[in-house]
Structure formats: structure tokens, C-alpha cells
Length: 190
Image (cartoon, rainbow, N blue to C red; front, side, top):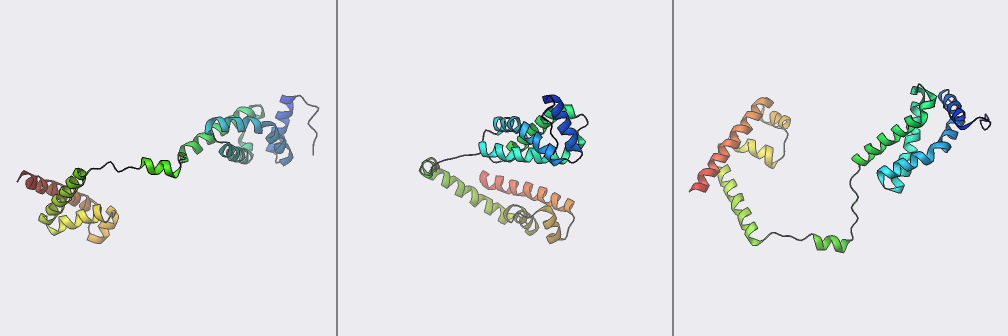
């Protein structure tokens, strides 16, 4: 293990980076000790979660160790490490679900069904009109709409089931929706 203590701080850091680039893990360990506070502070500021910041700190140093040979100028290490930290913190913050802590009683009190009997009646009438409109369609239109909207089939699955190209399936869906809208307008107008 090389002793870098007699060098000034900047020279020591540059020497440690250069040694790390040649595969010296002890030198990289000393860089981790020197910069872990800065990396953790950036991570905590970005993520606002102590445990997440600790985990990110580890991930940053793993990433830095894997990519340190790509750093052209050893003196740029502090800025390079900060940019890795910021980028990884942003990625982690964007990809994680929002933290929502609620007590079960509070959650139960806020999950109130605000629907009135009128809403249920209107929904029932809409469903009845929809089913009636579907019944008026030709079998191919009805089956196309049912496969896509009720069964949730993809266009590719429908293409296989109906033995037709995807473009044809798209056209059938378009035409069937228009025909269903027309049927429902006619029923509402009556």
C-alpha cells in the first residue's frame, strides 16, 4: 500500500486517481473515503431520503470504479464524480414511485365513494345503450370491438385470431367504432 500522505490534497487526489486507473483498489478506496461525504450530501439533497442516499452513494462509487479508466484528466475527478452522482440521483428519483405514508384509518376515511344513486342509474343506462348498440352491429364489427375493448387483445393477437393483417384490423376497429356511435346516436334520439 502506497503512502500518499506527504502530498498536498490536490496532488494526492490526482495521484490516487491515476493509481486507480491502473487498477489500484487501495487507491480507489482512499478516494471513496475522501469523497463519500460529498457524494452522500448530493444524494441526500436530491433524494431527501437517508436510506436511498446511502444506497445511491454505493452505486455511484461502483459506477465510478467501473468507469474511472474513461476519465481523461485526473484533476477533473471531483466534478466527474459529482456529475455521476447527480445523474444517478435524478434517474433514481424519476424511476421510484412516490412515497405516500398514510395510516389505515386515515386512508379509510378519505376513500369515500362520492357517487350518488343518480350516477349508478346513468352508468346503467349507458351500459344498456352500449349493449343494445352492440347487438345491432354485424357479427364481425361486434366481435372486433369485443376482442379489443372487452378482452383487451392487442392488434397482433386480433390479427392472428381473425386471420387478417394488422392494417385490416385497424380499419375494422375504426369502422366498427363509427357504426357503434351511429347506433347509439339513433337509440338516444328515439
